[in-house]
Image (cartoon, rainbow, N blue to C red; front, side, top):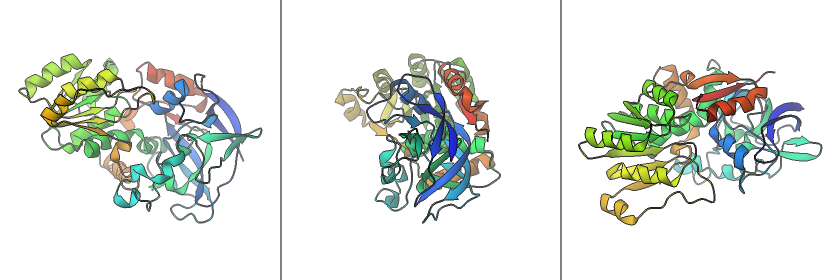
Length: 371
């Protein structure tokens, strides 16, 4: 079949719309008609600079929601007509990591950067050339073929534009606070960066019972929104935030620091550690350039204060359990998801949407597919 998709042929160029040929689903694969896709910063990172871990050309998008159109042989998780969210990390449920409660590390995520399915072949093509699908999802296409292990069934009445957000950003941010940072009732939490991921770290910290939730972001719009999403204080830069942190904790500093800036820099880590109290935790959720060192510290401040630096992928969430759970919190009014959507875009407006994100105008832009 034919599908229209936003693709990257080389890094550093704008997204380009292309008509591609799409193969049907094979064993354990699902044909999805995407209805909506979140515009995550990770896609912008690969558009801007690519990386040795990324194969091009590829179809972008990894935060999708849609309808199952067809299934290949042996598929058990979903059936035609089901509404689904695609998890940007597959969860097979039976590998070593899934079976020990660490679905964010599922072995099926091996080919995320190459964009091929588990048999190491591709489903998107144009004039004999294979196109990968970012994170083996490709939600910037009207249709895609994905692994059944990337599919999470949802209730039919959940809006696709809302549902797509829990496929990556909302779950990653929320779980970075609740799981990776293990925020507890009464604690003080500092969050660096309040975009599509960080805003949900704010929500996660609030729902976990943090007493003080301090947001740091240079963009006034995002600071204003952070207060709406549960932050108790918001600052433009770390120095001012640290001074207030010392005051409100009587010098004890923060229990947990969560780094969700758009692109991690060495200064972010240093500032975070300087704001972390005794036995506190610094969670690094942000991505960084693959060949650039961003964690460079002397050991004494870590040892003497028994501080901990924790990496977090998907916030350490289990997508099969946590994606429906967050949608349940949305239903009960405890999780703001629709409010994350600043603007909706057509697929042909994708470059405008990402420019809006870079200009600090959006918490989350969402592409609404036309069929």
